[in-house]
Each structure stands twice: as structure tokens, then as C-alpha cells.
Amino acid sequence: MMVRLSSPQAGIFYSLLVLIAGLFLSSCKNEKETAPIPTTKEIPMLEKTFAMIKPDAVKAKNSGKIIDIIEKNGFTIVRMEKTQLTKDKAENFYAVHKERPFFGELVSFVTSGPVIIMALEKDNAIKAWRDLMGATDPMKAEAGTIRKQFGTNIGNNASHGSDAPETAKFELSLFFPDLK
Ligand code: RTP
Ligand code: MG
Image (cartoon, rainbow, N blue to C red; front, side):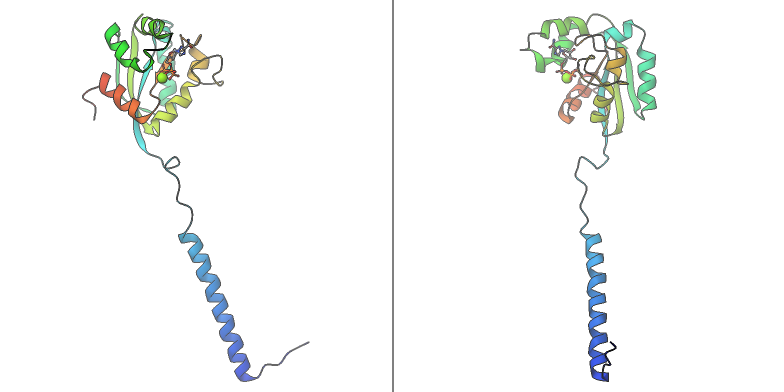
């Protein structure tokens, strides 16, 4: 059934229509403006981390393969050096574990031969490098990770990576004091 509007009624009707359309459009705009702000975890942040190819992987001549994986995964190698840790340096480096039962074994292992130390840079490098290394125990590490491919057991696990921003800062300053 057609309803005929008188001219004043039609005026009110069209004004209401314009008002509703305006409200609808402004609500769409507000939705855009109040879109959720990404959390810090999702914001890419260029950072540096400390990495080490441990004595087992250097001895097994896996350094080249590990460095290749690092570069293929988009890390920039900012510093790199082959060195052998002294007992003092290793104890300082792993000081956080000094009360743990495996501390002596850990220090003895990490000083047992040359290592390759690196400062790596990438967006969210600390987590990215830890993810690429895989779990501490190579048996539990995911397929494709460095520890799965090149580690042997929880002690001989091929690589090290800083586990948090404060740790990265401490470890980078311990091995690369000139690095900004
Ligand atoms: P890392 O410091 O070498 O990168 O290793 P991570 O963070 O994955 O593991 P963390 O808890 O910091 O332990 C340092 C190193 O200690 C040896 N470990 N042995 N026998 C054990 O139960 C045991 N737990 C840890 C591992 O070689 C580990 O990389
Ligand atoms: Mg650790």
C-alpha cells in the first residue's frame, strides 16, 4: 500500500533520512578511529641479540651451516668472532645458573673449545633467534630448528641465545663492549 506524504511530512521524512545516514556514516568513521592499537608484542622493533655457536657445533664443522641459516632468516650479523672462553668469562656469562647442579659441567663444556660469538640484528631479534634455535633440549626442539638439526643432548645443544632484553644487553656488553 502506498502512503502519500503531504509536503511538510515529506520534508520531515527526508530530514530524518539524512540524519540517520549521517549518524551511520559517522559511526563507520569512529570505528576506524578506534580500531585496536597493536600490543607491543606485535609491533616490529629492530633489536640486537647475542648468539653463540657452542663448542660442539664448531667442532663438528657445523658453523657455516648455522651462519647460513641465520642469514637466510633475515638476521644481520653485526659482529662475529671466533674465540675460546676462559673459565672466568664463562662463569660470568652463565652467572645466572651458578647455583644449578649442572653449572660446573656447563662451564667446562662452553670452555672446551672454540666458539663463534655474534651480535645479531633483526625485528624482534631476541625472540626470533630463540625460536630459530628451538628448545634447550634438542630432543624436544621442533623440526627445522638449529638445536634439532645440530644439537646432541641438553648439554651439547649447538647454540646459545639471549632470553630477554636485559640479558641481551648484559651479554652483548660482555662480549662486544664497543657495540652501541
Ligand atoms: P642457553 O642459555 O645456552 O641459550 O640455553 P637456554 O637459555 O635454552 O637454557 P638455560 O636454562 O639458560 O640453560 C643454559 C644451558 O645449561 C644447560 N642445561 N643443562 N642438565 C640440565 O638439566 C640442564 N639444563 C640446562 C644447557 O646446555 C643450556 O643450554
Ligand atoms: Mg639461557
